[in-house]
Image (cartoon, rainbow, N blue to C red; front, top):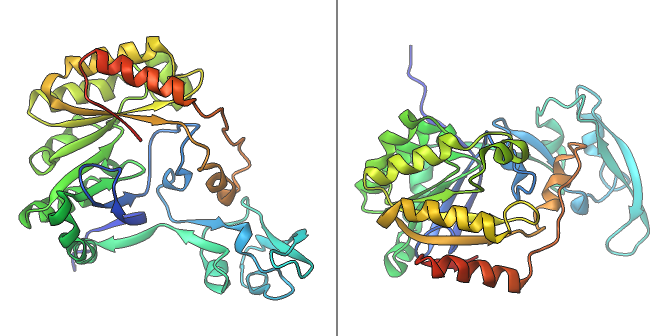
Length: 319
């Protein structure tokens, strides 16, 4: 039997990234995540399968197009609401997607010339990814950058992640792994020799609250961080700032103490203030779940949390 080539499922590839590790980077976003952060700014990353997305703003209306109406084998596409066209020429009728009938076959997306309907999640081989990586090498060399493997949770596709890391290191490319840390240690241990830095999320120390809000406890996350540090791994710790969850001085004091426990392994702490730019992505999935929205943290609050960590002796940046 012919051996099947190893592939990874990605939902995005972002070049010239400057917030996902040192220098200019190519960030690979792998699909699938075991966490369910209500504020997730990339909800399309959560499911492990390729799925249909619907971008209303791109729909030109069934009067001009309507091709998707006739191709769905499950009658999941139907005429939807009426709205004013963007060019001001009059009203158009959009399409509606019945998610209870949709099986993500992609036929409607193939028929949609406006790309209002599109499939999120593409399978790539390691060769295809490395071909893209090599195009970015001049930027890496000039800036001290490299490749960041992110998600979702990239370690939920461990074989593919490890293969890309190995190939990057063989070609002298700096590597970063952006992870929640919520995976078995047996998954993390093999990638340690090929990972220059971990972009590691610490969303809180209180495990009961972590499970209540995010869906999983955090003992595994914290223990994995300790093991990485003990074996010489390096961190960029990432802390989200969410109203009524992780924006208090008490929470930052707890996370700061944990960072100090990790010692020299922590090269930098990155504060990530909540933003609402991801809300439109939730709308594209049409999941019928309430969309999380909260007040954006003030500059004064973020500055205070930064100073708090700096006063503890930590190197802090704000994104």
